[in-house]
Amino acid sequence: MANLKVGDPAIPFRLPGVDGREHALEDYQDREAVVVIFSCNHCPYVRAWEDRMVAIQRDYAPRGVQFLVISSNDPAQYPEDSFDRMKERAREKGYNFPYLFDETQEVARAYGAQRTPEVFVFDRQRRLRYHGAIDDNYEDARGVRRHYLREALDAVLEGKEPQTSETPPVGCTIKWRREPASRASS
Amino acid sequence: MRVTFLYWEGCPSHEEALARLRRVLEEEGVEASVEVVRVDTEEDARRWKFVGSPTILVEGEDVAPAPGAAYRLTCRAYVLEDGRISPLPSVDQIRAAVRRARAARETPNR
Image 1 (cartoon, rainbow over the protein chains, first blue to last red):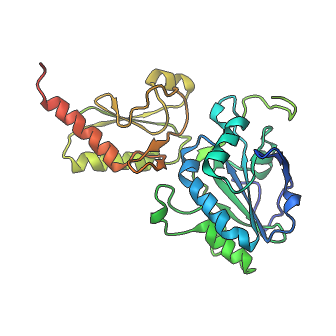
Image 2: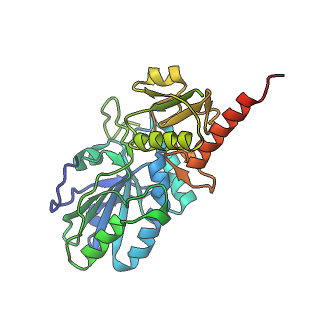
Image 3: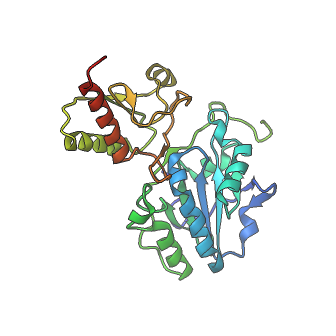
């Protein structure tokens, strides 16, 4: 279970992005909604959903929605999740959102994230309004019946409560370090 | 027919994959008892040559061979016929593997 409940405030963070900049939650104060997604490179669930992530960010950017996508996986165990490989993936897939590296895994632990992908939608006041999966069909975008993330964003942007505020995140487990590492370690 | 289904609990879709496998076997009229193996450790993964969950072996052959892939506890990415990535093999991939195995059995050794 995530540490955040619906209605809880977002937990601030500052993380390096694949664009060479640091990104903090507070940098996006002017956005109508912020979507934090725990993700990674190697997970097939992410790979099945990532084009939809790009499409949703594209569709909702004009309405003031900002995605912040975070990889917290341990690259020592999963080298394809290294920061360099994250840069490659963002380039290859045309990521239109910051892709951030949570090297110490402190942000994932603070949020209580367990899976990739795992979505947290925050409203204008940065209160949690939706947590869970992107939609109900990772295999086939054309077969989706419930667009949870889009539905949540539509509601939040209209100042309403999403019809569904919580779904089980479906995906790979976050790959935790075997030994806790400090931010300064490589 | 000898069918082995290997999975790791860390990936959520193994039950769906197993149901898909059983459905294909039934549709193909294949009598097979599916050996279900839970892979829990990296040592298990090496022993079973397990390249990710789920893995389906039909007569010892992977339904989607992944040469060179590391043996480890991970979720497996399948490339579907249309190029999409999926955490599960498609019905057609499983069906093709079953038909290959059946054809091999029906072909006399030379």
